[in-house]
Picture 1 (cartoon, one colour):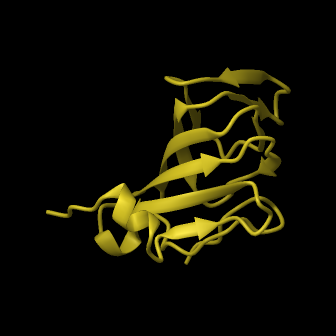
Picture 2: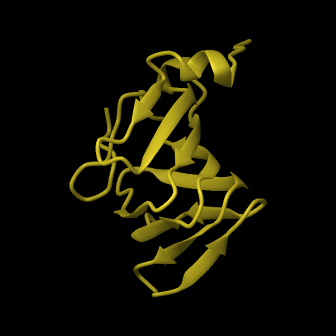
Length: 128
């Protein structure tokens, strides 16, 4: 059994800050935990507006608080995000995330992240 708290993890190497200032991610479950996925609590800062394209990972994102929108760059569709909304990047979808207020998101990645990843120039995480 693995037991961790968000509060303790937030004060450790598990908290990663985006060098571009858009988000921070507290990575509660990582590849080393051997569960087959990783689980993060990510804070998207108010005013963030950035493109991502997870070429190597599938991701599910559940909004716990805040408001924003996600734009699917493949279809042009824009979806509002509010507490209780989940969006699932099941096709390695290129997308833009916009935060109208600070948003707290619960994120699951498959394959799991190792912990130190930040977005590359394509808005993707490399496989480690």
